[in-house]
Image (cartoon, rainbow, N blue to C red; front, top):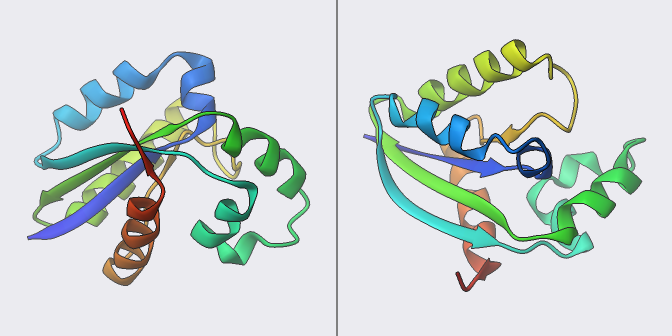
Length: 128
């Protein structure tokens, strides 16, 4: 069994499609292990994605992420990371959001990244 996480990005809330995404994930062969909200500081964006430092859209990221708590879902299942990535890629393609940071969902692409990101996101949990 493998763990995977999904972070809903600000554009999910702007578009009002959170429930649509959750309904799609609910059909996947995964079980929900944990759900919580996180609140980013501007520095937190770089904690989660250190590789983005200096990218041209950093100012926009810094405006979008710290504005509201975001939902995190942790799933467990066989090949959970691959299942979530395939779901995320299909969603982006259907919604025309390929190659954009405003691409609705974030999920780590391997178990090592999951461990690092889960540890960080757990440290910035907020009360419901």
